[in-house]
Image (cartoon, rainbow, N blue to C red; front, side, top):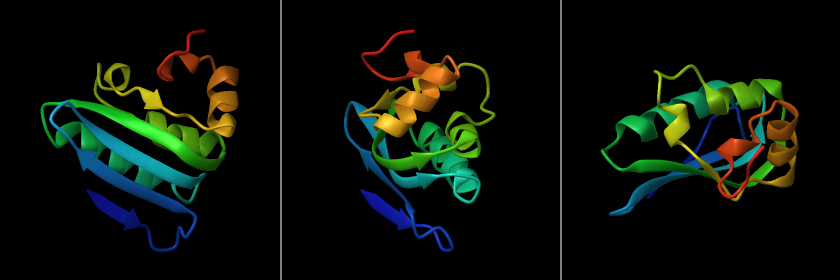
Amino acid sequence: MSNQLFPGHSCFRTSLEVTDQEMVLTISGELDLASAPALDVAVQDACWAGPGSVVVDAVGVTFVDAAGLRGLLGEYPPGILSRVPVRNASPPLIRLLEVVGMLHLVEGRSQ
C-alpha cells in the first residue's frame, strides 16, 4: 500500500492497495481545483497499474467542487470510467454526482 500526501495540497491524500481481486485507490480530503490534477493522475496510474479492476474509495472526501469532480472523472480512454466504481462515497460527493447525473458511478446506487 502506498500513501501519498501531495505537496501544496495538505488537504488531499491518496493511497493504493493492491489485492488479488482489485486495486483500491483511497482518496481523502478536498477535491478541488488544487487537487484535481493529482487526482486525475492517481486514477490513471491505478487503471494502468495492473489487470485487475480499480475501485475508488472516497469515504474520506470532505469537500468536492466541479473541478475536483473533473479530476475524478478525468479524460480517460473509452471504457475506463465505466470500470472505475466509487465505493463509500461521502455525502458531499454523492450530492455532486447526483446533481450532474452520475450517481450510477457509486457502488449500490442508481439514477
